[in-house]
Image (cartoon, rainbow, N blue to C red; front, top):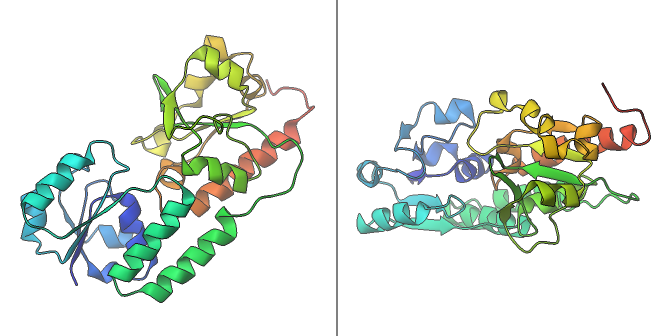
Length: 263
């Protein structure tokens, strides 16, 4: 079997199922596992995939995802080439489990998929019992500030970490927010996870210097953290790593409650 994966999350699912050997090509953004993607053909960035380059790889299956806004055009181009395309569109953790199961079935690795889902469930479905879960605002983008809402898997990651998404009551996948809305959300921590930006280039000072945010508990107490987008923004196996990272944030907020602000 020959498979081309066009999103990081699908690439990581295939590899987590022990099927890295079926991959013949990936999009330019797939960067994990490094030892796998480094040997594969690249077919372009997620929004500018070269459909002819994909066709030239003679795939038996192309894995696409509508979690990338605008990817519909890429899917249309692939279908125009007569390619066998499986289009995924996860929004929740349950959707991610479904997609792992679906990809496992397509690759003839149903038992491995079931084991992977069970492993993910053991972390992502956890609901720690603790009073007053810290309100943790995840920031997808700084200008304008864009944050995940109720329909994002991040809401479930935060619950599994013992925290709470302040946007968890808004029935959206993500949304821009104003300074006034940020103040009303009253986060105790802000987690930077900027989309498409290497984690090494995240800048907590961008959040800390916002004039209107200075009285937020998160800013006042210095609870601004960085978590790679790979752990929060990719609907695949590494969402588990995101929960572990968020648990550390939650623990720091709890430890700092009632303490003097760091200066």
